[in-house]
Length: 428
Image (cartoon, rainbow, N blue to C red; front, side, top):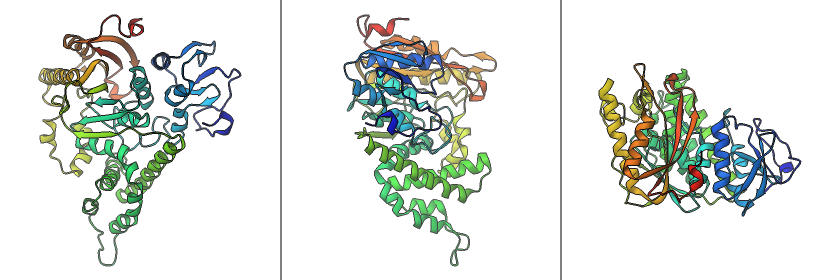
């Protein structure tokens, strides 16, 4: 553990020592009310008693059974008792200009992804501990998998999109094959360049597909897909983008390994599966917690958005579209099919979650043809019918997604809960 004065900081975070060593200091990127609420909730969940000072960015620590746990787990705090938190150290390992894209989080430009900081806080809030198993049945870009892995929590990620499965695996598994990735880099790079006997250059996809180690093969396939994205979205030259992103990805994965060793992290196991959230191949009452966000397919067409990458992977887009939730049909039929699929997914979440454990669903209302759809209300109503008890509903303002989504809700449910369980969550 390094004292503040010994630690370098990222440009986005001010380096300063609080005058009172019993203080907790928020990270500078904490800007919204929901973030402050989550910061308080994770402190409560970890057994800390605090009061907010006049600055609203510092908390005075009144009592904590285990300060070391606060340092290792907290998501929204930069300083605890004159020590930098592990999270503050993690976010320094950032090869991008965005403070939320540290380590491998940046890999592949995926729309609508989680804020990793929020996921880390939610893992704390629902009480998941090292060795527990969490599920994200809509793993998407793999944010929840990375954050669970960093906290030593095992993660099962389910996803119908082969592109999402690939990027989630690379973000969490490439760290296990760094030497092999680096070992074949020169061979891959040389084969893709034109030469005397191959004036047009070798086919890059064929070269990557011939790599025997799956983790290494996935790494270079991901770099290829980022190059396709750069070419389609930013008109960048393909091979130059592939070379640059391969190097950048490798550097980020080395950062992941280095900071894990520096902080003595015991990484959780990650299992990313290609599958259907409506029919989970997971046993009844087998997971310790769920954190997920169902696809905003009415607001964002995931097939069209990533068509270039899915085509490069060899998939038939109309055929793949039939497997996705929320992108089938038009008008009222599209809404009906989405609701039916969401209902089946919620039913499966309830089935696989252990009794008295928590399920977090981040979801918002979309607007279709000028009419707002009450997806949040639908989700709450159906979850309660299944036997979930809503213990917290946190309003979260969001931006983007073509202005279709204006806010979303962080819904925390407990399976088989009663009024005596986690009473503090029911307080307004």
